Length: 365
Ligand SMILES: Cc1cc2nc3c(=O)[nH]c(=O)nc-3n(C[C@H](O)[C@H](O)[C@H](O)COP(=O)(O)OP(=O)(O)OC[C@H]3O[C@@H](n4cnc5c(N)ncnc54)[C@H](O)[C@@H]3O)c2cc1C
Image 1 (cartoon, rainbow, N blue to C red):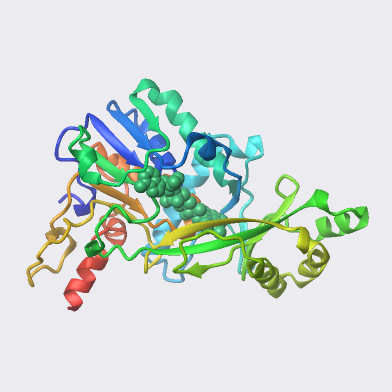
Image 2 (image 1 turned 180 degrees about the vertical axis):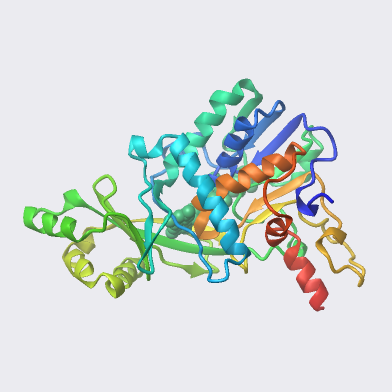
């Protein structure tokens, strides 16, 4: 039986719309190019090309979610992190200095992972997709999509929504996506005047990323990053002084000596702010959502019984792990678009089915 959320489009694909060119959208374009998709692809992005291209770089950490019983979230994390690391190697990120993949220290144990420049990653994916898809790919910057129906009635056979948020979809779909604004603090080595203070700081920094009360990077192009704060329910990325202080306080909880050494220079620290969207079980949404406003009969109790909104695919809710998740999810979604079998057990896709919350709420009611 096909996976309910990952069925191919009803019509043979000749034109696909990808809404949003963030980590998810750009990963999807690269995965389409890798799979040698033969159809036309149009990417819509609401920001201007200039703003998109000049966006300030932030460092993203790649790390696994490990559970004692290796639950579904942990299985997805294992597969998806391996895929991200492969992509970064294929895009030559470490060799070009855009990533360090020496692993992460998590609860004192070395795990696979590292860091990568988030802005570089999306640009590298897009440029790879552009070079392979050629004139089959067109990009429309400064175009905010506000109506999916418009796209579907204007020659697109399928649409993938990768906007982070779910504002294009009705609330009745129970996607349960919450905005979480946050801030990563960073300090530039060059802002420290004293050679001695600089050397002392360098000697206290780790050789790989450390994930604990906060995330700490090694020196990355002359900077150290500490983050990130979480403001659940806030959808505006505002720079907050309190967050700078809190990031340092969280660092002090597991690296007190380093936090003390950073403290006198912390007023010169910069910050990167953003908003991530997460679901209530912290897993992403991948695939076909439920048909808007369906009247579900009481007998509906399984995902395959839900009526699907065919040809509209969600790729949403990457939360704080976009870099570790987007490439794997993009490859799975491309297999669905091309009608190919998936390489992973069906139960993994049930865990990230966009209909799961609606079904759970329906069964509970
Ligand atoms: C403070 C902070 C720290 C983080 N740290 C890490 C980390 O260490 N590691 C990690 O892996 N992840 C991290 N993340 C999370 C990561 O940034 C997200 O997971 C990732 O950005 C999600 O990618 P996305 O493509 O789903 O959404 P986005 O990156 O939000 O991209 C969505 C795109 O869609 C566009 N768009 C929106 N609406 C429309 C529309 N209607 N029409 C057209 N275009 C539209 C937007 O302009 C945007 O370009 C962090 C996030 C924050 C905020």
